[in-house]
Length: 310
Image (cartoon, rainbow, N blue to C red; front, top):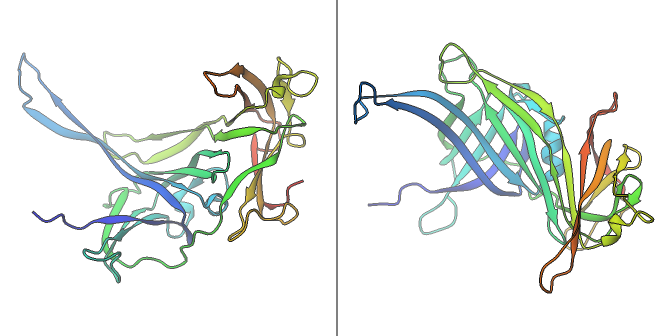
């Protein structure tokens, strides 16, 4: 039996912006099938599809472009003229990739796009995970439309990569010795339907509770004379800034004075839940947890693109 048509992930299009640097991806067709055994039966005599939830997710190193394409922390898919699209690039038997209009497209025209998480390890590249949730638009089309024999759009590029910066400030204290940093955007989204329709037709944000976790080997983080006291430290947008350094192609990093970096700022409370932990010959580690709240004006977590590092 032949192996059939095979594909690899190509890129994601949000509106008219192509996003590359895709390291992982998936397309969902979550189907609930109900089958019951009433009247003391052993066998299922009746089955039916009661719900389907569609969407796709991807992880990219093109962090700034992806977040800029959304424009805000979350975005309705229908706000974009072309919605959200994921492309599969057809693999050529006996070669690399096929050319021409032979590829696959998964398209969503209504729903919501949200970032799920951002993470980076020491000397690694920052990765961003994004989720696209599909809802029904009231037409005869399903929420997720699969189209074969399409041409791949142009404009795909491994545009930019970022890593940690030594300039990280939490509550006014500079945090050095980091080994990993992660952001859980904490966006709780609920998709809903009605009238026993199998598709959800609306999706909305219920809560936004972002959090940052930093792990490292610098135990001075918990030294009350140097850094964060045991009861924690209050943070605001002026004294709490997490910079991501842009890498320079063919070199190391873009200079701090060049406005091509990223910065996350926020208001909240930072605590050290793990003062020290170790095993065997490994260095002891500690961690910082930062949770955010609303100051009445700014979003709890604010992203600044194309900035200098100060």
